[in-house]
Image (tube, rainbow over all chains, first blue to last red; front, side, top):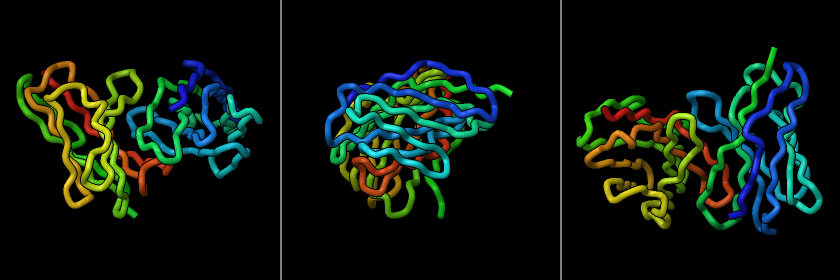
Length: 110
Length: 114
């Protein structure tokens, strides 16, 4: 599985867009980019995933660069409840093991 | 529908005792995962089940750890002769069929070994 790297922490003002970067320069053609988040004392929660096209759902948008070596998760209007650790992972279509890195700890500030 | 459930939510045990942690996946999900998360750390993969078989046990930290899954549903993670370093939150997740399918996590079991 491709290794992903993320900044260890970020701050974002409440109401502003939070842009969380992820580097996956060794990603292969059959690996999807997945984002999960973990709010304190809870299990991780799925956010969004994509292969090569940008994706949007009710929670967030995912922008993947054309060369697929990096991506950005966008929370358009961050709220205090978005304070969490965000994990970016690369998942193969057929390989079942998923490795979570340390993620980015996002703090949304009032 | 019901999500992934785990029991107990908290377990305090004495060093050297055996513990069993239970995971009830989402109905119909064939893939089941166990992870461990120590305080302030990321998720550590332990074991993965597809149906009742475990194609990947590579994450089990020692032979004191074992897991089984029966009937393609409930899974039990057993830790024998617990040590203080086993203290962590043990998370279970299930997905429709493994691979790139979304994992749905349970609330975890917080294990404290005194």
